[in-house]
Structure formats: structure tokens, C-alpha cells
Length: 314
Ligand SMILES: [Zn+2]
Ligand SMILES: [Zn+2]
Image (cartoon, rainbow, N blue to C red):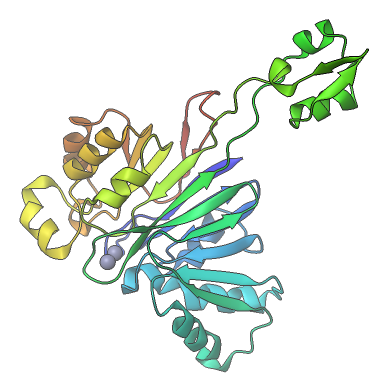
């Protein structure tokens, strides 16, 4: 299972219907947060995501709308008796940030928090996937992130294996794992019965940024690109000055990168109730675009399976 849950989709300031930035990814039950704006813990309660399975928080940058939810979330998890360690990643100074957090409010935390400073290009390898830190262009040191799954082994051709005289059972598994086997004096190679390896899934999160090359390159053929689209194109100058992206620019980048689906987020309060200007200018460039709203959930299937299912919980 790979699911993206949009907990906060507002740019800079919360509004009555949008919280500040937070995107949760649930991968086979493991929870990861990409940014954690103020009030994220309540959004997690509303979305019924739970907290215990949260292993990591990835901070894009140290603007308040991306980090203020962390202290409260940590204290709540400690209050609930959490013992599982938590890792917090981000640009420089995460380590100091975590030290301050741990001392805040004289709370004695019952679990370990490790702060890890990342450089653009760093890769965190985990079982079955990795997280890549991407160089972005914002007004302060900033990172985007990509979750990239490992390739999966190809499909197993049962009929072919049976034809070759392999009995169903453990020998099937050995072949599927890539081992050659011997049957009736003949060696059978895995490539005779296992198809080509299939791509894993890829999700890219830009954080706050101008459109930039590193996000474009990392997003090539991504299943989902979640991109800053703070403003509409009539606010282009302000987008450049504040180092954000317009909806049209995000759509141009998605098109160049050939992503499957573009989700626009970090929506300025001026469009909070009516995102039509953002949606229309992006749609004119890139067909498969959605403007995120709080509590929106997306299932990300493998490319050789069905289409995306978007679900709104409001
Ligand atoms: Zn922001
Ligand atoms: Zn920012």
C-alpha cells in the first residue's frame, strides 16, 4: 500500500479550511511526514492516521508554516507513552532544532529523537525504498524530497515453469528470487520463467521553491509530483520575489518531467476558497492535475495496475 494524505495545504498562513503544510505518506503501514505545520497533530486525528507508526519527519525548510506542528506532536506522542524512536531530517540545523525541542516545556520525553542534517543529493536507504534530498530554490536553505521504491522482480510465468517440468512449490519461489535450479538433469534459469523487473513507485515533494532543475530531473516519470503552487500567473512577480511557483509553472515542469499526476499545494490564502484560477491555468498545460485540499487522500498503484483513486474526506 502506498497512500498520500494531505493534512495541510495552505501557503504560509492557515485559513479556515486549510492547515499549514503537512503531507503524510503511508507505505505499508509505516508513516512519514513531509513538513509538519502548526496543528498537524489534529489533522492526523481527523484523518485517523494514528501516530505510533510515524517513523520520520522530513522538513523542507525552517519557515514557521512547515515546522511549528512538531513540538506539539512530539509532546502528544510522549504523553501517549511512545517508546519508538523518531527521526527528523532536514536542511542544516535540524540537530540543534531537535535539542531545543527535547528541552522545550521541561517535558521528559520517553522516546529518542534523532535530528539528521541533510545535504542536497543525500540518499537515505531503507528496506524497499529510499528517500532522496533534492536541492530546491527558496528564500532560505531548503530541500525537496523523493520517495523512490526499489524495482520489483518480474512476473512469474507459472505455465511456462510447469511446461519445463518444475513442480509448483519451493522451486517456484527459488526461481522467482533469481536462483537457477536443476530439474531432471536440466538447469533452468530464472530468466526463462520470470519477466522483466518492474518499476517501483516514485513520489516527489517540492516543498517551497521556485521551479528548479533538480526537482525536474528527480521527477522524471514520477507517479506523483506534489509541487508548490502558491500563486496564479497574474502574481508572477510576487512568486519570483517570494521564491514560490505559480500553478502554470508547476504544470510546465510536470509536463517536461512526464509525471503521471501533479498535485498543487501550498495554496495562498487569496485562493483558499476558490482555487479555480490555479486549477485552470495548470490544466491548460497539464491534463492530470489536482489542487490539493486538506484531508484529500490518494492511493498510488503500481504502474502496471489500475488508475489512481483520489478520495476526499471532507
Ligand atoms: Zn511555506
Ligand atoms: Zn517557505
